[in-house]
Length: 149
Image (tube, rainbow, N blue to C red; front, side, top):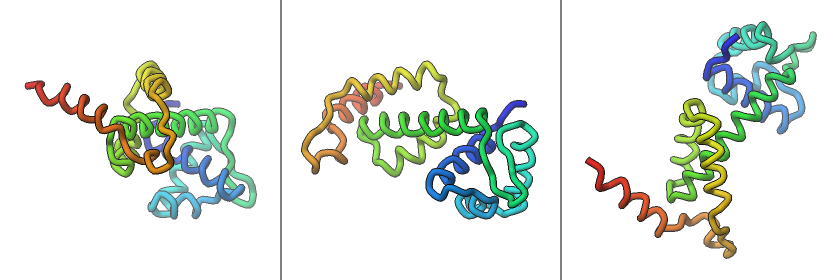
């Protein structure tokens, strides 16, 4: 069964809630994603039928091995993309929003190359410089793409 973007977002949300709270219920997912409980129930049915999660008699949601793997991959992709964008000078809030969109469209190969790029960059050591992008790099990226037609 092919898992669509919304299904992956549900799995990631369940994993994050599980890590934060230990127990996940449909209402927790609905509140976090700002959707209705009936929407969550429909999604949970689809994900349960696909073998990505289980629900016990007390309505606690648990990810299966395949559901957890997809959620972890999605979280990893999001973090890698956001980190790369921030290192290029993108505002962190914008980088988070863009990473959420990009993670569903990027190939594993490109994602890996971006991760390697970010890891190869020199780390900033001064605490007040940690959140500031390297403006020389950001300027070079702007210059490189600004002369395109």
